[in-house]
Length: 176
Ligand SMILES: Cc1cc2nc3c(=O)[nH]c(=O)nc-3n(C[C@H](O)[C@H](O)[C@H](O)COP(=O)(O)O)c2cc1C
Image (cartoon, rainbow, N blue to C red):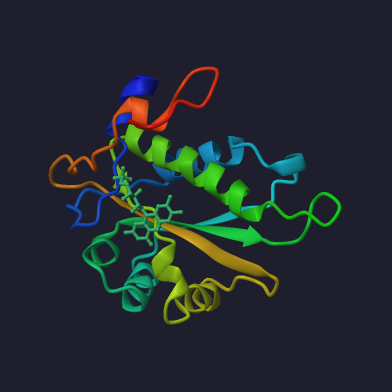
């Protein structure tokens, strides 16, 4: 898929997935896209756990019982390391976001769908429950989860504000 088409087609999908599988080969490509993302000081702070074991996916769905989690054929868990990488500065949120965006684009380019799950991890100790399930060591935290599968139809587009309301050239342009 052409790059700008991939960018335009990427949408968060929250419905049920079809039975179409997500291969280990596809997951590896998606993880490689994450690893290519920039990180502050090239510290490469995020790590990733790809889950394709149905028993572990079922346990993730018990923690977050939404249609997308209950039917996901795979999931990638982005694990943050909050330790400072330059003086006292930590960039783990930015590092995770860059990696996740690369993965979402790779997921789209490969014909799969996903949703950026972040807010839901902050409720009911869901991040901690997933960390325990995946045996993530102390000092690291589950930051974002991407359930992956194929949607039955193209997800609805969440509309964007007009270009002029979001962007300008050279100097700030008062929004219309
Ligand atoms: C930092 C961040 C956190 C998000 N957390 C969630 C979440 O917990 N659950 C969810 O369904 N979507 C979550 N989203 C997805 C947004 O709701 C979604 O990107 C937005 O509505 C625009 O829709 P689109 O991605 O389809 O263009 C998150 C997105 C970002 C960037």
